[in-house]
Length: 205
Ligand SMILES: C[S@@+](CC[C@H](N)C(=O)[O-])C[C@H]1O[C@@H](n2cnc3c(N)ncnc32)[C@H](O)[C@@H]1O
Image (cartoon, rainbow, N blue to C red; front, side, top):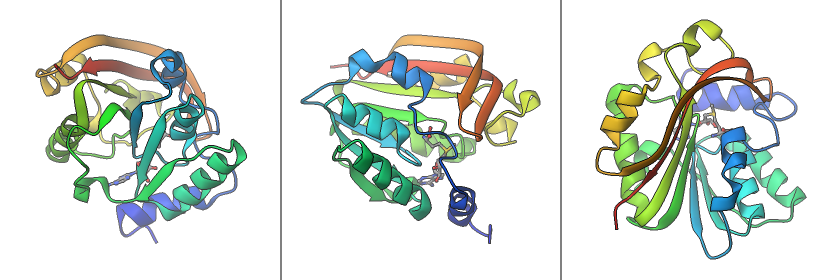
């Protein structure tokens, strides 16, 4: 039954295999040099764990949060295969009152389930949990993605533009902000030419 967002995602993750693949997201992989031992990293809505597990393989302590039990089961299995410890939490991100200033890096990869009013709550929650001097890494879709139909929700208002991210993170220092159209091959869930936007923003000291 798809009567709640949680059921919708559990259903999607019921299918065999990894909906978004077992390899990390290409943007996360391109930033592998940022992750290492001694760091605390939070991966928000981490799904089947491909990004959290990749970061843990670089030596960081990772907390991976998602509300789908089906996703977490696969994520735990992936962590087991790579023999890494990840702190998995089954949690609705909107109800999660994670510790303030706890993380060196927060990853938010394809978390466009939030409509504009909830996105503000979500971004504020993310920002609050970053240590002073820490980073937020975001990859999401731009409005042009709606016509590509190669992944992401159909709600154009959930998409990101450069202006939207600049405004939402105006209290952070934006180190990298890039709009690009690229071929994404990340499982059957994200497959084909895609309208993307990447951001790295630093919380001031
Ligand atoms: C498009 S998937 C991306 C998963 C992962 N970040 C990745 O790149 O592979 C979106 C994820 O958000 C999770 N999600 C949606 N709403 C959520 C919520 N309110 N709280 C926690 N997780 C949520 C879903 O279960 C799903 O795993």
